[in-house]
Image 1: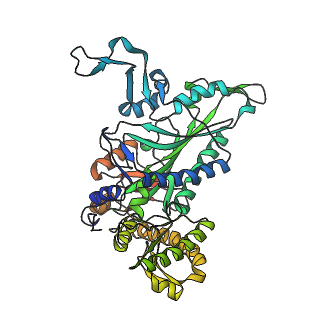
Image 2 (image 1 turned 60 degrees about the horizontal axis):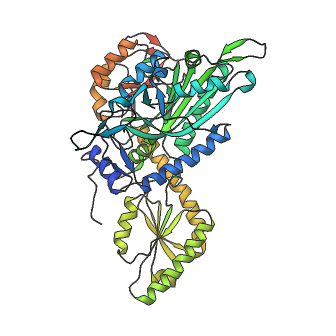
Image 3 (image 1 turned 90 degrees about the horizontal axis):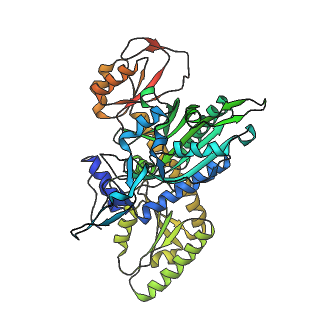
Length: 490
């Protein structure tokens, strides 16, 4: 297999696009801005789903499903929410087509106009809180901890596979609580879940913090985020959790009778991650050879490739390899034995390197004779021989080592590209090189807009206060304890 990727040092954006296409993850569809997720890409998403779904259920959440279509009047009930999503909404006005009078195609039937126009969901707060009104009457009905796996539509003008598409897959949690404290605890708990998942499963180090008022989710009082650094030094928002206060409860009149017999509005949260995480994995770990996948989300953790010349050798190698295949499967390892005669071993090596399979096992006649196999690690590209007697335990250990190694590599990269700054001029001079810039901040919303206009960077998050030290805001010069991460972002 010839080299198929543009080097990332030459053109990072083209490298990313090449990799998504050549590794068979996804492709552009005939609908502008939408993508077809191919089986290998979807298998990664399934791994992400399975792990997150288990984590959600361990924290007491259950799954449900709500309609794709939202009455337009629902969006207008929460002012900041509609303002935040109005430019991205796809609107359904008619429900039927008919043949055109000239017989050349179909047209919208003007007599099939909807009484109320429908929005294709950009997010589900409004339809869900309209439903919760019927579900919640008493404090005994709380907390209500619901998640849904779904697709959403946000009519993006500039799209990129996985990172930003007009339609994408995600999960969205929507919870209802009796008190402000419970809702805040929930919002913080779920951003912790996302951080744990990103670091332990995706091997992506993230910085956790809260958004500025300018960057909050539309309709939220607080938005908590995890931010990851990609290999070009840009930030990628990789998960958010929102404290919604009572905004949606008041908009949809969702009240409950408390233990004292008094009516109160419910307190709310929402939180979500999407198929954008696949883009995050690609841009955090992969190289010019192809994908580098964390073993925990790799559709295939091990690929076994036979090498032989004669029919006699072929049968010996196949028998030897299939014994290893069955043993690895018995130990819960995702493995494939590629015994296709249509491609040579070298072609297969390159194919699975491109697809990011963490471990490659090659078996030839001499390996059988020596009771060994050749192992190749995708993360380091190192090759070495392993005794057949210890193979299974070594592969299990190696999968853990690879998972830890790619996390450590990404963490070192982030640490080496994070800088402390004390003045906006330092940001202007260095922002084009990429990286995270840590600064003191006590600016206004207008100052934040000025920062963006002058540098094209944004405040990714406000960091938790970890000490009593203070410094001067890089724009206003005011003394403050507040520190922020500033970066260019996807």
